[in-house]
Length: 68
Image (cartoon, rainbow, N blue to C red; front, side):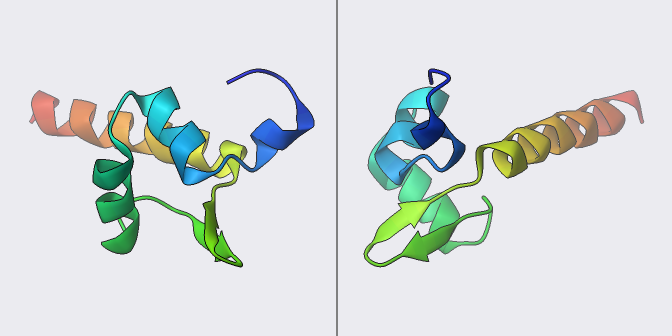
């Protein structure tokens, strides 16, 4: 994702591209509550800073699990 203002609130398709997963895989994760996001009208949107924190937290959890 580039540094434009729209990147602060990427849509599902943009985030799926960023994570290199299909739209349907990301949609399923959002529906299951695995990824933080919310709907604005009919479009899923994600706070870029919150997604970055979520990714770092998941990485830390994985590292802790591997160290046990």
